[in-house]
Image 1 (cartoon, each protein chain N blue to C red):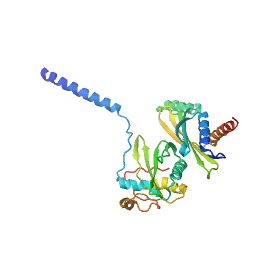
Image 2: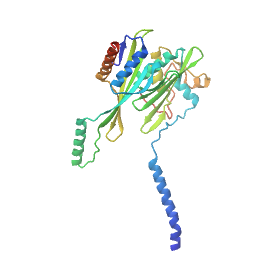
Image 3: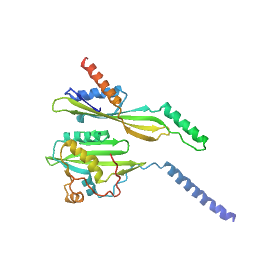
Image 4: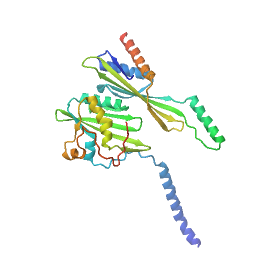
Length: 141
Length: 179
């Protein structure tokens, strides 16, 4: 899920394409170490879901009717981090890209209350699709 | 009597002012950000946190450090290829820095140190088992080289025993996060 192989020997060129793909997806580059084949990015996104908010408000009202106080809490924003590492496979051969994601979720009270590794294959596929598109465009220009 | 009261007024005002100032300073106090240091000695910590590997190829070591941290679910914060250091964070709670430097012409020393956040307080991780099982073990497998005791001084070697076996030094004030 995390790793793909690319038949490109030029690591720096592949790193540039990967950085561009990362920017296309709205990430800001927070660390770049070309000598180590590393680029890291992050982006902030809304994490609010109508169902979760409605559920929490309904719970608050139900508990209030029973005389209990409840502070409704739901996901508000998320910070998604992407770590990308390019490693050579053999000498002057293809390169392997490994990308991993995690996210930190802040609730409506402004507290960091959930952190998790992202294991949705679609997120990974989305990144590699964008990278492949970029590589195709670069090949034809 | 009135004179006594008059004499007390400035003292009371002073006391109130001191109380208000104390309350203001208390309100301004922020959560501690500096990690609580370990109570273990520097020599002991060095033995727990360092291993030597029979390779002089620092690039391979750097790549293995990065791969190991990524395997363990860390996201990278900072990589300094020329200095051979990597800093990474695992789910906002555990921060680790791994650094490599040459020993002689045939070996490389790798030192890892971690800080764990429990609530608002951070603690320096000084548990030998954590470093062995949650960094050097996987790192050795990635590098495909056996880890050896790193410190050159005999005192440090004596405190931990062979690094090839999981260290069993008891955690005193240590926090033992599980990866």
